[in-house]
Image (tube, rainbow, N blue to C red; front, top):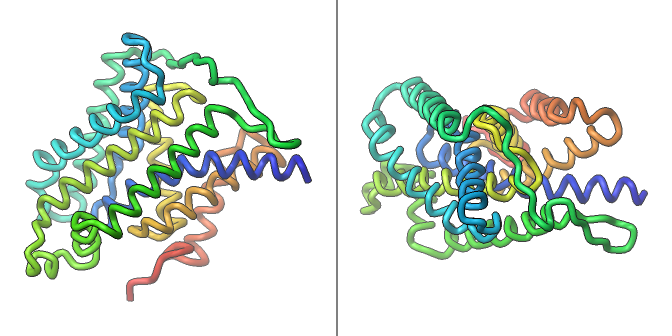
Amino acid sequence: MVQFVQIVVNGVFTGGVYAIIGIGLSLIFGVMRIVNFAHGVFLVVGMFTTLFFFERLHVDPFLVIPLVVLVGGLLGIVLERFLLEPIVRAPEHASILMTVGIGLVLSNLLLFAFGDAPQIINTRYSTSTWHLGPITFSTALTIAFVLTVVVIGGLALILERTDLGRSIRAAAQNADAAELQGINTRRVRSLVFGIGFALAALAGALLLPQLFAHPSIGPTYTLKAFVVTVLGGMGNVAGAIGGGLLLGVTESLGAAYVSSSYRDAFGLAAFLLVLLLRPAGLFGRSRT
């Protein structure tokens, strides 16, 4: 039982970071109705931004997070304004191809700037742990989970209690009706894409102390973001939290009791099972 609780705890902590990735993708899809195939690359941008400040300026990875979020948000706004806004009325495949192209360009820029070797960072807490009874917690993962809870709570307050949040929810429900109510949906789309980029970059900063950074790992996290989003229901921000936690626990249990070599496969199996049984996602509603 102790081993099982340990595995579930590890899965929940990892799933919290997955939720951050999925929330960003869900917001973008909910408001802009585009499937962002560059989302995982945004996470890698956050990793390398953190790595740059850690190596060059010796800033702790968790202390540089506000700057990573700011850089990600600004890049997202610029990309949406100059690359996605001009094709907002184009067929759906245009935005898909555009996001694929954005991902390829960013990946190659990172490859040119940082090289092909995997990059890791070593901090005093990268391998440290703390204990609560018989359960062992990774210090880095604990910090990441606490920050994740704070960010998700803050985002929930913004969406529920502010004019910006109400504008985002209105644009997600019906963009034309939101325009008639005086909401600038063009501005909302830019801000939402910036928020999505910032959340993905934040996830990259949170994961870097435990993982390695490489320009080519973006598609792996794009796939995880899709799994989280589908599990929770496309465009469902609250569902993305549940989807992220479910993915983290599923991967953790599968790796522990079957094989760590197939860790990613267990998440994909859950993804396919949900698609078969509930195409709208565990927390989504079918649009009929």
